[in-house]
Amino acid sequence: MSEKGIIFNIQRFTLHDGPGIRTELFFKGCPLRCQWCGNPESLKGNIELSVFSSKCLSSNKCGSCKESCPDKSKLQFTHDKLSSIDSSKCKDCFICEKNCPSNAIRIWGKSMSVNECMKEILKDKGYYDKSGGGVTISGGEPLLQSGFVSLLLKNCKENSIHTCCESSLYSEWKDIEKILPFTDLIISDIKHMNTDIHKKYTGVDNYKILENLKKITSKKKELILRIPVIPGVNDDFKNIEKTADFIINELNRQIKCLQLLSFMRLGEEKYESLGLPYKMKNLNFDRIEFQKHIHKIADYFNSRGINCLVGTKEK
Image (cartoon, rainbow, N blue to C red; front, top):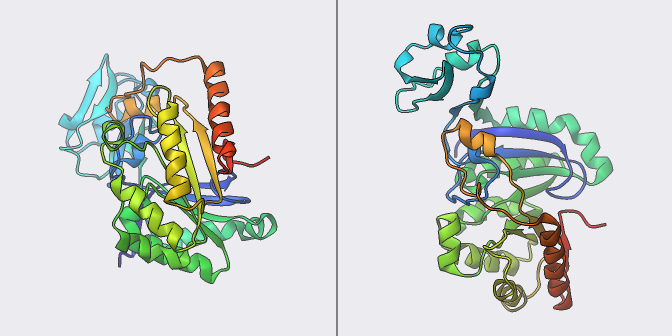
């Protein structure tokens, strides 16, 4: 079992991924490549550097990255500003980031032990107890680090902390089984019911995800489902009807609720900083009309006896 996990963010006082006030730990690495993902820094499992060129003071005025880097050939400049770092040449010493005075270079990811994570988590134990909150494990895909995650969740339960795992469930069942005994709540998505469309927009098919959802409901584990509603991708009523049929017939309505999350154009600057294309860049739509459409979708699910709400919190 791994004694270290790679985490790219710890967010305290979060209110959206589980009940009450929570601490959320975001794990690096994801097998999916959802075109609307707002956290591109989570995709690769390794610790990596990104460059925010707009913050660079220029090599003439500053040049600290050039002075400190053992292999200056990996630093790429555009109009005298650092624009990218060739990861194939990078030795992961991260000296350039430590010496950058303007935070133009950022490290995504940190190797942490269970004890280091628990030290952060326990800072807010009083808030969890008063609000009915706890800890949420997210990503990326936390089940890629299932050994470490199961140990961390076990420690949370030993400290009487409510636990939630937010996962795509694109995982082997043996990895899910590791965390189930120590997980009070699971949050997962249904992105599309059509396998080919699902693969087109996420890079993987949906078979494993749907099968794992069925297994989890058979275990009577508390489950919240979400649909990230993307205009022109999964918001047509043919897909919505098939999603409802699946929840009713295959999951036996064994979900706490279904949450509809409206597409938001997030993370564009982070994509650029990592040298990745943002594939939703040209998606244009009327947000007011789209919100009306989402509420109609929620009305349809509720009419079929599925507890559905727009957003992540019940009123």
